[in-house]
Image (cartoon, rainbow, N blue to C red; front, top):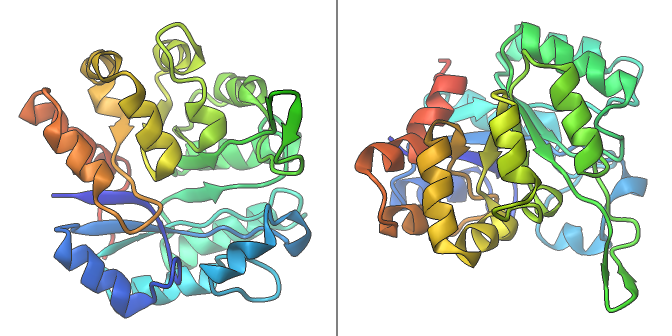
Length: 272
C-alpha cells in the first residue's frame, strides 16, 4: 500500500475529482489531507492564490479537508492544525478529533515558536490522543549577504524544534520543509535529532525533502538503513518523483514498503 502523508484539499489546481484521479493514476491508496490555516497577514507570498482556493481566513481550511474525507473515507486520513494563538485552539482540535475523526495534527505551519507554551499545550494533547504532528519548519536564510524570504518563517529554527521534542517525549513529530531538511547532512542536526529522539519522524515531501535526499545518495542509503521505521513518503504536490526515488534506490524491499506506506499506516490507520 502507498500512502501520501502530505497533501491538501483544493491545492495546485486539483479539486476533489482531480485528486482522486491522480491518486488512482499513481497507485496511491491513501492521502493525508492536511489543513494550512494561516491568517492572511501571515501568508508567505501573495502568489499562493494561484495554486490554492482560499477563504477569507485560511489558505487550506478544515472544511475542505472534511469534504474530501466525507466523500471517500477509505482514501483519506484527516488532518487539522488550529493556530496556537487562538485561545480556543485546543477546544477546536478536541472537537475535530471527536466530531470528525481527525488523526493528524497538521500541517503545523504557524508563525509561532515551536516551544511556545500554547504550542506545547497542543503537542501534549496530541501525545495523549496519539495524533502525530506534521511540522512545517522554516526560517529566513542568508545568501551572499542578501536576506532572503525575510518574513517567511514558521516554527522558528531547529533549536525551538528540539526543545519541543524534548518537552513532549510522548508526542510523535514529523519534520518537513526547508527549515528541517536544510540540516540534512552527515554531521548536522537531522541525523543527530533522529538518533536522540525516538519520537521524531521525517516527511520526504516537496522539493525540500527530495532535494535533501538526492544531494548525497550514499548518505541517504545509510540514513534509510538506520531510520527506515521513521521515514515517510509524502508529496505536497502532484508529482511521482518521491515514489520513484524510493523505488530506484538500492535498499531492501522491506525498507521501501515501510517508507512508501507502512510507517504512515502505523501512525494513522484508516478510520472509516
